[in-house]
Amino acid sequence: MRAIVIGAGEVGFDVAKLLAKANHDVVVIDVDEDALDHVSEKLDVMVLEGSGTSTKLLEEAGIENAKILVAVTAVDEVNIIACMLAGRLGVETTVARIRSTELSNSDSATHVSEFGITVAIHPEESAAAEVCRLVRRASATDVLPLADGRLHLLGLRLDRNSPVVGRKIKDVMADHPDLHFRVMAIARGIRTILPSGNEEFVRNDQLFVIARPKTIPPMLAVMGISDQKIHDVMVLGGTDIGAMVARELSEDNNIHVKLVEPDSERAEDLAEELSKVLVIHGETTDIDLLITEGLSDMDAFVAVTDDEESNLVTCLLAKHLQIRKTVALLSKPAYIPISQSIGLDAAVNKKLAVSREIMRYFREKHVLSVATVPGMDAEILEIEAAPRSPITCDSLMNLDLPDGMLLAAVMYGKHVDIATGTTEIEPGQRAYVFVLSHLIDEVERLFRSP
Image (tube, rainbow, N blue to C red; front, side):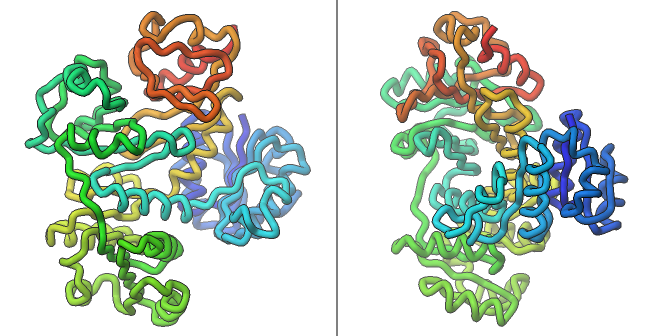
């Protein structure tokens, strides 16, 4: 299946890599010859030099056979025009990266839907929202809302003192029958386990647990994890993400935010724009400055500069000063897997928002969304049960479901239930399924009409 990617930068490279790995026929277009050379050296894809707004170049890329066009250059106007052209040339799905909040905001006078764009992606906005969720839920390594926010998937790290270490999942659940949560996955070393009830908790396990928001505090208590509130936050970097994080957190009257920005003009602009934030002009790598400005007194430290190495180092310093929560913006594949093993609490990758949306359009039509979480080698499918599909034939405990698949929850209307063995799925209901990558086709078959 043909896919065209406009933009060979970091996000475009990741998108092309993702699509090529799924055995799609990928063409990458960019005006930057060096960026295209990098793509060509690393990936088995076709590259074309030129503008994604050129009809002639799009035709050369085989747009008449393309199912999807993804425009992720650094220029909104290029992305929008490329998607408009693709739509007029018959491409079924167009995805545009939009940085401007004037276009991505649903309250704006002009919206991307007016340009015929199927979906607009704002990676910076998505990353900022994830950072804020992680700061507010200080005990979690990951926070992913599901079922329109009615459920949360939390990443949790078990230390040696956790009361559940050495116990089976089913025994812990049996001790708390009124506490509805489910352990959906365990990252143990380099393995991802979708556990049965007989699986034992092990020290240093990273758990991925699904629960209702109001159930999270007592569930954390069961795991022996404290959920202390955050009051003082330092944000390193006045980037778009840093500004969004500072603005969002400062709206909470119980949270005090300091933001450090090295560019004097940018710092002045942010000081005027963020009335509730203390903006500090200074180098983000100046450790003495950070300590002088109260780094050791912070409850949380967020590093979202454009320098990933600086984000890593300053977060490690913050952990050395015993700051409760550290969050770093990381995108390089080599950094994300090791981030928690070297002491970071959480890492955020702004590219994930793009890949989640794109993979949704390469699944069958009853797959409504696809999500992934760093550290978990499994996908989370939001999938609708078709009439007479195998998944609707009996309760889950009586179905022959493959190992490597766990059903998390079922949603019908505005109601959502965490799944158990007695759960029965009816046609038209939406399910949230955790599945190892090699079993995705099998899961789709279970939800498909015969």
